[in-house]
Structure formats: C-alpha cells, structure tokens
Image 1 (spheres, rainbow, N blue to C red):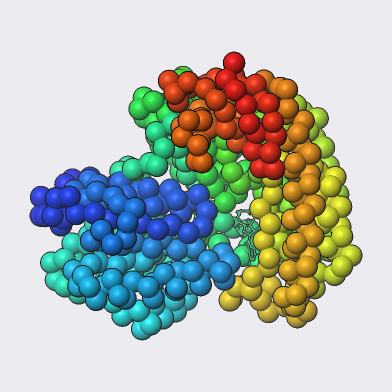
Image 2: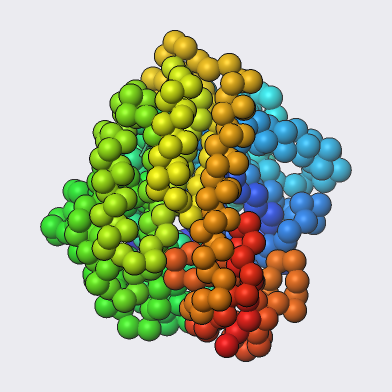
Length: 457
Ligand code: SAH
Ligand code: SF4
C-alpha cells in the first residue's frame, strides 16, 4: 500500500500544527524502532513541526517503546511518570506512546489507567496513521487509542527524516516467524513480511541521489528474506541486486539467524565489492542443550562450523553476536560452554544480556529460573571474557591502514573525526573536516578497548 502523502499535506493546511511547534521523540530498543521514529519524525516535519532535543520545549512528546527486556519497559514507565509535572505546567502538551510495548496484551489499557494524561496510544502496525490521530486530538480534544493486531500490509512511501545524511537504515522485512522461547518479538511485530525488491531498490537509489554512501538492511532475520513474494528471490539475490546500484559505497545487514545464513550469502559477501565484511550472528548460548530449549534450531557445533566457513571465505571479516545469560535451567557447565565458544569464535563485539522473563513466552513458564545473583556473577564473567577478546583483536589493527567512511566529528573531541572501517570498527582520528562523507585511508596508531585511534594518510 502506498502512503497517502496528499492527506499529509491536508493535515498541514488544516493547521494540525502551529508553524514551528516542536516535537520530541525518545526511542528505546533496536534499529527497527529507530527507523520507525525517523518515519514519525518525517511525517511531523511534513505537517510543519520542528524537532527538539529538549522535552520542555516540545508541544508533542512521543515515546517509542521496546519490550524485549523488562528494564526497557521500566524505563518507559519511569519516564511517563515524570511527564505528569510537564503536562500540569502545559495542558496543551500532547503525549503519545507507541512501539512494541503497546502491542502487548493489556498494556495500552494499563497505561491509560496509570498515566491518564497520555493522549495518543498506537502500536507497531499503524504508526503511519499518527498525523490522523494527532488531528483528532487537536480538533476534538479526545484521547486516541488504536492498537492493530493484524499485520496485513506494508506501507511504502512514508516520509522519513533520517538522523544521518551519510548512512541510512533500510528495512527489508518486518516481523519474525522463529518464536525463540525467550522472545516477545514475534508477538509484537507479527509474522515475516518482505518488501518488494523494487521498492527497496528505489529507496536506496533515492538515498544515493541524496548523497548517502552506506545502507544497513534491517530485518529480524534477513536471511529468510523473500518468502511470500510474487517474484522468487533469495536474500543473496537481493544483496547482489543492491550491490549493482551505482554510487552506493557500502552495504551492511542485520540480523542473521545462524540457522538461515546460507552459503550463497557468504559467497555474495565475498564476491560483491560493496558488501562489507561484517556479520552479526547472534549465538545466544554456547550450550547445545540450552539452544534446544531456546528453540534456536542449531547446535554449538553447527554454529562453530558456520563461523569457520565464514572466516575461511571472507578475510578480515568481523563477527559480532548477542548472548543471553541465565536462561532457565542454565547450569554452570552450560555457562562454561558459552565462555568456551566466545573464546573460540573471538568475536569483534558482543551484546550481552541477562535473561529477562517475558510474559506469554514459553521460557517464562519454564521451571528452574536462575536466581539473580547467579545471573549477575555469570554475566560479569562473560563481559570480562568478551572485553579481553575485543581488546586483543583491536590491538592487531595497530600500524595498519584501514578504509574509513567519515561520519562526522568525534563524540568527545570536536577537533577529531570519526567513522567506521568496512568491517564496522569505530575509528577516531586526526584528519581534515572536508573528508566528512568520504572514504579515506587512516593509519591506526593505537587501539583502545572499544575503538581505534589514528590519523588520515
Ligand atoms: N532478531 C534478532 C534480535 C532480536 S532481539 C535475533 O534473532 O538475533 C535482540 C536480542 O535481544 C536478541 O538477540 C537476544 O539476545 C536479546 N533478547 C531477546 N529476548 C530476551 C529476553 N527475554 N531476555 C534477555 N535478552 C533477550
Ligand atoms: Fe526473537 Fe528469535 Fe525472532 Fe530474533 S529470531 S526476533 S530472538 S524470536
């Protein structure tokens, strides 16, 4: 379905905003949520709003929520509570809440009861209707709550206001069919739906025409891209088509489920010049027994075999991962297997999580939930092991010259530039400001715990 831009222009002329009204968006969770927020921002700018980083200056505050772990949820509740005072000071303030948390059974009602000053509640499948909801609140002064549970359509052509003008996220598929036993994503994001390749190509060509150099293709499991499309197409086919887009410099993608990462994708990375040598390959656990309980459909041995193949075929590849500690029933032996796997793979980076019980998931009903103190002790041990490996890997870059796409000035030092190597390493370096947006060579002089330091050559 094509987004109705004309209607958006109507909202603008209907003065849904007073010109220069400001909005503030806070986003929790993954890159998909980030991209959804960029779309909310794109629609709001089209109807005349401007963005602000200061909540107090905003006439609309939007919270785009995540519910993958309990602490993400708690942060949202805390932040919503803090808005009460702001709303009391400014009764015209409009508070909207959306995202994955809203798709959970009973959550929207709970929010309305606990935080009655929230004006708009909507879910992940209908965020394109936000300007309409805003109009209703403004014109009629009523609360709006709309949660859609059926994910039947993909809406193309929503205006998008991206954070960067050099690199962009491009969602290629929505939803997930895997039902890992700990995870809420399939319940809140629905089943897998792939975008048509021509829509994806058009979006990327438009980005290139606007000066973008890099895209990251997004999906919960990009390797199963293509199912259900009229045209028969695999993820590797899509990668090769994107690789032929002129003017594009770099392509990344995430996330790859180890059970679906096929040899043709590995060969595409090897053979296509724009595909970066970087794979995010969440392992979750190093114990085949736990992996089975998690419903991950691969064993430790199969995972290690896949890593071996990737390393053989793609020199300089960097591999990153997600790991969950303290899944129900995880024994000390299971945990040691995870430590052992981490050491064998030598990850370039790893997102480590403490298992969080999620209502309605099978793992929540499992016996043998692990006590917090054990989870924390294992978690700390894992983080130490991961950090040691990352530091060791980063040290191998000292004295090397690497290609960096320059993204802007460094976070902590305005006189320095920052960017990433093809395989995703963060580099802070001395260079000339004109290099921003370009590919440059950087000599690495020093490796730090999570980044590299160097100078442009
Ligand atoms: N689709 C992706 C990522 C989805 S969520 C994938 O399959 O890899 C991102 C990460 O959050 C997961 O990889 C997992 O490591 C973590 N996660 C998901 N549910 C969790 C839970 N209940 N507790 C702790 N971590 C969780
Ligand atoms: Fe969650 Fe598993 Fe789907 Fe990833 S693949 S989103 S972890 S159910």
